[in-house]
Image 1 (cartoon, rainbow, N blue to C red):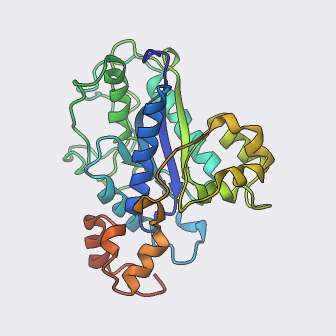
Image 2 (cartoon, rainbow, N blue to C red):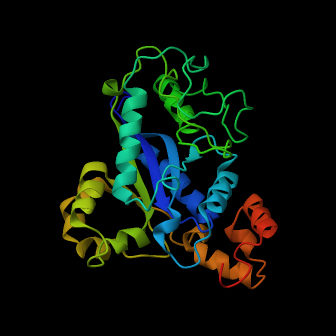
Image 3 (cartoon, one colour):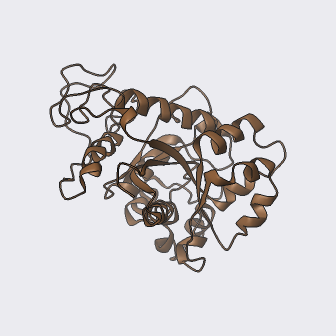
Length: 307
């Protein structure tokens, strides 16, 4: 299958990230590896979208901390980015709304014939801070060693680093510039670009809980977008699928990543990480990246049972 015939994918993960763990990053990496091995997909980017503060989950620390920890966790990645749009809305957003936001944004960004991505647009994005230093976590990696199709789509991936909406005094997050260049004659219609929801089997299982999800939202998430599932802790995904008529109906839109169930990252969770922090358990270094641990200790997050 040629690269032009392959589906180009952006993986979007929604959740509390309270805190973000090595398991979350492992999920992205395993999903990309598996999708590439199928020969049907090229993953050009990953987006982490932390939930709004009003989600109401007990012990959920403010989004300013969760966003910062997520940025620290992916600062060395050349393809995963953190997007604060969900956190900056007036209230909690459904997963369906977040997917639709990013789909519409990507259509606007890649649906234009633009000049050169390395030449900044002369038209500032509304609200963008002017005359400031580049964001400290912005990616500048060179993609010249990748195949031709990925070279073009790598420019979309670079833009993921700017795909945010920013409030004052948060200049580490930048806007996506809809006038930014994605290469000559690079148009959305010329490639098949999909945003897939990336999740663990726990989220998949939540689809089976009566009343938790709107049927209309599930139809959009699974039917219109599709999901990539990285099983956790030996979950029986077949059993989960059989418990939901929507999942059964759209089973062809659900990609199960064949991961090693005994992989140590498959049992890592935010809950285990918080408990380890509260009890001074040294195993926390196995759950969280060191920059995240340093930030938690600096801000004294999760040190008490109240969060």
